[in-house]
Image (tube, helix red, strand yellow):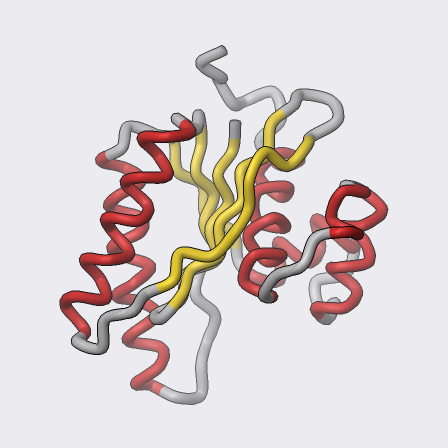
Amino acid sequence: MILGIDPGTTAAGYAFIDGDTAPKICAAGILAVRATESGERLAELHRGLLGLIAQWKPDAVAIEKLFFASNARTAMAVAEARGVLLLTAVLGGTNVYEYTPAEIKKTITGQGNADKLQVRKMLALTMPETKEMRGRDDMFDAIAVALTCHFKEKGRLRFNR
């Protein structure tokens, strides 16, 4: 099972996919952060991800790498959140894989500069269950991250099952 994560400061998208030849979504959603203080936000992300890892026991965690942001304050906050999520995944005993947004888009659509709509359309073709799913972009981005790991690491992943 692969856990895909789209990191954020007030919310992080997550998606669990499983299956060797035809991956299926087991669960997907948002780790919502309610705290307003920076340190407590990071702690909430940690606790939320720790709970998901304990519940689902993924074999691998795939997380989106940061891209250059024009707002330095936002970039720093996302980098902090991403660091907490990475540390939590590693301490949870999983293999961790990281992909840039362009790498994810290229893997899912064939174009590294695809927009969110193009990614959603390809997800619907690859994983038809996403057509009926409702949720924030963060959740669909996490599905794309997990699917990227499925395609790129196929044959290298060692699943516990």
